Amino acid sequence: MGDFYSVVIAKTVLYALKLAWIFPVMTFVEWLFPVRPQSFTPRLRSAVFWVLAAPVAGATMAVTYYALRMLGGHALITPRVWFGWDPITRGASLVIAPIVGAVIGDFFFYWGHRAEHAFFWRFHRVHHSIGELNAVNSYHHASEELFRTVLMVLPNALLFSPDVGPT
Image (cartoon, rainbow, N blue to C red):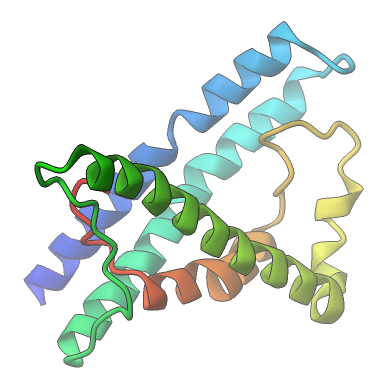
């Protein structure tokens, strides 16, 4: 069981660190090119949400991956970038792998969001009621992360192995 906690904590921290750049970078870009003035409160609320949401998503992916391994299963796809000598193949895989990952991730995001509208509107409408919308504050309700985890993160974790090497 010690291995379980180590894997979950490590994967959660790694995932949260991968997301850590989003809030400051997007806030800076919006400060440079504002569409309309923004108060500090929505940004602070967003920062708190991101600090809590990133570990939840990371832990979900880590637990799913670990549970699959313990049950003798594995994710359906383990994407790899080919780093052989052929520069054309290597270059193609470096371009294609992220694009395929983005398309599939967006597929789950789109249909997960549609499911929230169709079946969980009572909770999801909070997401649509934000008065000062910006790049990082579009998720302010705990149910958003719960539904996103079940409808978007979990299918990705079942489909793609997190052990993707340099990809």
